[in-house]
Amino acid sequence: MRNKSIHRFLEKLDSIAVIGLGYTGLPLALRLAEQFNVIGFDNDPVRVQQLQQGYDSNQEIELHLPANLLPIFTNDPSQLANPSVYIIAVPTPVDSANLPDLHFLKKAVEQVGQFLKLGDCVIVESTVYPGCTEAYCVPILETVSGLKLGKDFSIGYSPERINPGDAVHHIGAVIKLVAASDSSALEFMTQLYQHVTAAGVHACESIRVAEAAKLTENIQRDVNIALLNELSGVYEKLGINPGAVWEAASTKWNFLPFRPGLAGGHCISVDPYYLLDQIKPMGIKAPIVEEARRVNEGMVNRVMTHVLRHLETVKDEKNNKRVLIMGASFKPNVKDVRNSKPVELAKLLKQNNVEVELIDPLVDTQQLERVAGLTLTSQIKGRYQVIIVAVNHTAYKELGESYFCNSTFETALVIDLTGAFKGVIHNRKYWTI
Ligand SMILES: NC(=O)c1ccc[n+]([C@@H]2O[C@H](COP(=O)([O-])OP(=O)(O)OC[C@H]3O[C@@H](n4cnc5c(N)ncnc54)[C@H](O)[C@@H]3O)[C@@H](O)[C@H]2O)c1
Image (cartoon, rainbow, N blue to C red; front, side, top):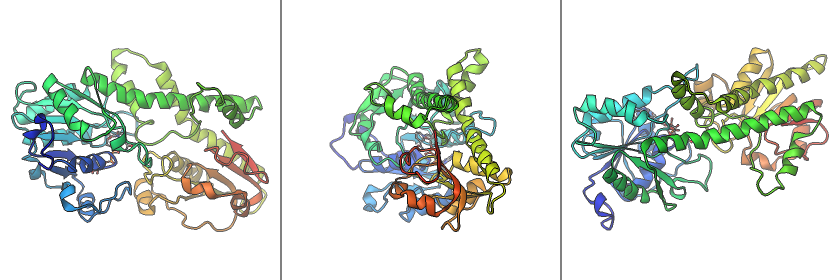
């Protein structure tokens, strides 16, 4: 153990295993490795090899640290034999029908179960529905290990709050929620996570509270974005400029600074479905949560309708189907294209015979091809009939009106889903939400 001064609860700790080294697991493993022996386990051999070579393909983490501050990166399950704490940070996506897909979690829990020993603590960090840790993970652990919760091992839940692409709200700077199956496990987790974040730890009264808190954080964002998406449609029909409304309303101290837009990614556009799927068989309804999802899922179609309507007005001109989407990732300043709404928009436009190109300063073209079957335009050529600013990447901040005028026809439309170019573009048709 690297830090002799740590609390007595941690003194017996031999090593910690972090299972799943993606956007959430890798920063956590690195943070813990500053003070503990950490096994960073991922079942993707390519990912492990890259991490061993000091390369994070997500480009979120700087790995050029002294070896004694790094986890042991491995895809060898036998390395899970020694740790006494197992932290699970594997994906919990939804399937094509928006139903929770727990197969990554199931596999990870089974792997842990094979190595579980007396006195071990298992901590789930993946986002799940309230009750999942105790009602879904614990039975698997007990069956595979032959051990009993409470008597032989403990379980806890600590949802991740990191925000990829955000240098301010990094893992060491946000409050961590902790919850556990018994009071000594809770005390242990509290001590452990105080070494992860300087912002402190909030102990929840139950695991289900911590699970629900994580969902609530993202559902609240989803609902607020949906409200503004809905209002922007209403104001547009009333002939009122929505962007000017947000600007005016935000001068009030208690106006929440949300913006309308595309809600994709693996938190906001996934987590509400975990709750909805859980409550449906119980006959419990959450109409606001459901409606927010419906409104936000409808945004891609709304934008597409605008594009097609504009292309119809220029149908007699040359290059009348050329559309450029600026930004392919699911949110600003990340290269992640999973559940990306700009990608969904590009696919829909293609199905409608639009010649659509995607450009992005961060996204890796090979990942885009692998995940979405689309290629990235490296350098724009010629002029477009529509430019859609879909993601508010910092790199776009420097662009002025000349960029848009030089790359579009005079009759072109600029669709600015970010609102970043409001008041900048005067010589082209401009639409924002
Ligand atoms: N990305 C975010 O911004 C964010 C924020 C908060 C919470 N979360 C939650 O954290 C969890 C992980 O998300 P992520 O974005 O880090 O995922 P990710 O896809 O970036 O990484 C997950 C990693 O887990 C690995 N993996 C999958 N199954 C495994 C197994 N059985 N054993 C070992 N490794 C396995 C994958 O190879 C991958 O490297 C999800 O539940 C997500 O909802 C994500």
